Length: 456
Image (cartoon, rainbow, N blue to C red):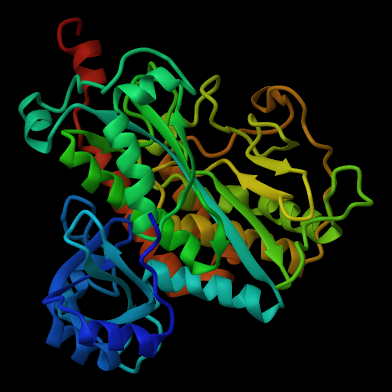
């Protein structure tokens, strides 16, 4: 099934104008990487192409449960939540196969002057990518996700009190053809309908755990890589509900099983060649690659909040569960935070394994690239040797932050992050993470009930 993608702004507008579509679907990313959107009448859409359309700025001022932040300045109760302008990105044009082929577009928040909005996640990613472009680099990236699938609906899970969700298959059975065939219609729909949606899946298989899958999204250039990632997460949920399946990209839903990752594969190109590749190096790593990697190592503690943005994220980052817990790198070592994948001139790349499936793909990609560029701009050298074996057992390397509170504090004081993301974005994002942490402090958990209810 071929992808329904069309490029060229004038061609896109002309096709929408001549199409029989009566409605257009548009969406923006909130701070948590959740798509918020609406349908527009075709005439409204066509009038908005040049001037944008109004979208309540609360989208950047509330959490994933629609609770408004009380500690942000760009938006909040003190602003009255007016409309902000969303500029439609015509290059993001797609049709949604599972929604009557409705035309679909992503958008960016912009200021009244037309300048990029300082706290919009997609704009933040674009700023970092533009900085790479000014340095002569094209960023190639591909994200991959692990996620669990449950035989639930929002109503059935709520009726259970949000406990004991039923996975679509039992047991630990990674790379299982049997398990894949037991849910073949869903598996097929993901592969074929995502391709038709312009989100090609390079590989799809079961992971180790009940009802867990992993999908690798085909790599591409620039912002399109993050677009594909955010659309994949939303699309998987929309496709799944047709089969009575609820996908969950929560970082860790059960202490019994490994958590869900959102790994970011990346390389830099000059438009013709892979600048990470050097055939003369035993590891196939160019000096540029080494500086890029050194930058990520140097900045990993500063950007952890982008990779692990929820309280639950840190339940994934534990020993013995496949998630990296220290600032480490290795050659084809899946226990390290940063995995160098040496290969051909085409395939040599870096896999950043710290991000969870719950991360905002725009911010995860931007953080990777920003840290890498920092290493290149500062001429950092790769001093530490690659770790072999279990990187979590590297005795002299301290653990990465264990809580959202610690990671947020690191980001708040990071000069590197403020340089690449801007003060306004860092202050806003930090405030949202401080809010998220505060919400958890008031929560009474199942762990507390089990531990204290009877005994104390």
